[in-house]
Structures are given as structure tokens and as C-alpha cells.
Image 1 (cartoon, rainbow, N blue to C red):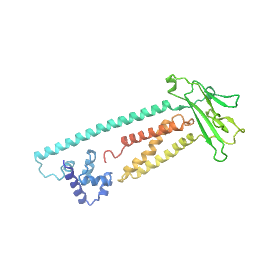
Image 2 (cartoon, rainbow, N blue to C red):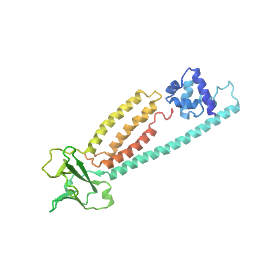
Image 3 (cartoon, helix red, strand yellow):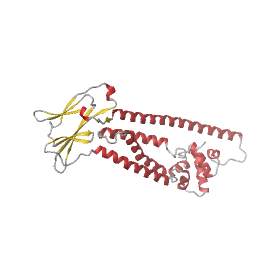
Image 4 (tube, rainbow, N blue to C red):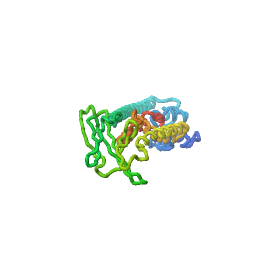
Length: 319
């Protein structure tokens, strides 16, 4: 089995049929660069491609491996050489399938473990905020929040209004699924207006939305919309539309040589949309820890992209 001889044979057969490299590539659903590599002997069709190449060029697989047409009578030595080459190719193909199975198993395990870790450590909405957060005003005017034992942690964010320069401070406390199993008990007092006096203090998330805890000059005339919730919910909509559009584009161009590139691009919005749904499952109205969810979505989306690219590759047997 000689790659240069086979490549020259493919080139001759292609020219006999008056096909360009690009036209042959479109018939085989590969790139024209792949055809060029084959014909120059720098590459060789894999076992999944040989039958398609032979069918298009109207020769047998055996003749492709030999790199020339068989004579009418095949000698015993030539038959043994062909059989030996076929066994070598088959052995190589089985080894590649074994490696692919190991990689696929690793990716599936990585996706599962990542989703599990993210969910176990992800913030869980506290419906009964009154039992988790207790507000007090000290004699010196400072406002404190007492986070009780069933709280896994808290987060404080400041936002300055660009129009009037007023500062809005938001405190959120949360549990995690893993926290009760850890046996850790915490009781924390958080000073909300000790370092920089905010104009407004909200608690998020409350049962009916953000709750105003403190206002320096009366109640504000604006509501607080949580940015992470908006980003993720809109991304699910936009990501779904992008996934459908890119997959439709792939379907319409699936017989073109560049379909493989479109397929890889189509998996990007699909992977991150699925990862968003997995990470935020059951929490679409409760998302408030942007950094944690964002990092989880990125990691899970990347792993899902590799898994889908590997497991659902429609060109795996043809490229």
C-alpha cells in the first residue's frame, strides 16, 4: 500500500472523468485540500472514505489500495500483498475506533461531572427570606444584616446611577445543595451602609422580587432588574434561534465541501444554549450569582461542544 501511488491513481481517474479537485470534493463531502493531500501522497483516505472514493471513480477498493487497475489475472503474490494491506488498514481503523471510544467516554463523563458539580455548588433561591436574613438598625444609624445558620453565603453588589450618581446596594444570600451535607454552620453579621453610605439598599431575591430594605430619601421611583436573569433568559431565546438558524443553514449546504465548517460553527450556539439550560434548570426566575453561573456555562458549553463535535459528526465516515 503506497500512498503516493494511490494518490497518483486518484488524480488520473479524476482527470479521466474531467472533474476538478473541488468537484470531486463536493461529491465526497470533503474539502478540496483533502483531495490535494491524497493526490500528492501527503494523506490517504481512511477506511470509511475508501468505498465512497472507489464508487465515484468507478474502481474497486482493492484497485485504490493497489494504486492501479488489476490485470485480468491476479497472481498469488499480488493477492497476498493486497490482503496484507487490507489487514493493516483494518487494524489501524480498529485502533482509531478504540481511541475514539475512550475519548467519547471521557467527554461524556466530564460533561456529567461538570453539570453535577455546578448544580451541587450553585446558589439555590431562598423562598422564605425572613428565616435566612434578619435586618437591624444600630443606635449609630448603621444597618446590618444577620445571615443565619441555614445560609451558605452572601453577596453584596453596588451600582451607581449614571444620571444622578446615586448608589444602589444589593445584598443576596443563598443556600447550595452541597451546603447541608458539609455540616458547616455559619452566622455572619454584614454591615450594609458602613463603608460608603448608599442611597438605597435592596435584598435580592425576595419572594416577589427585589425588596427595598433602606432608602435615604424615601422610596425610589425605579425598580431593580437583575442583569444576570435578563442575560440568561434572553440568551436562551437568542441562542435557540441561532441554533435553529445555523442548523438549517447546514442542512441546506450539507452537500457542499464547506459544510463541515458550517457544522462546526452551528454547534457553538447549540452547545452554549444546552449548557445554559442544564446549569439553570429549575432556576430561571432565581438567577443572581452571575460569576458562578457564567463560569459554569462556559465550562460546560466547551465540553458539550467537544462532545457534540465528536459524537454527532456527520462527516466522520466520509472525511
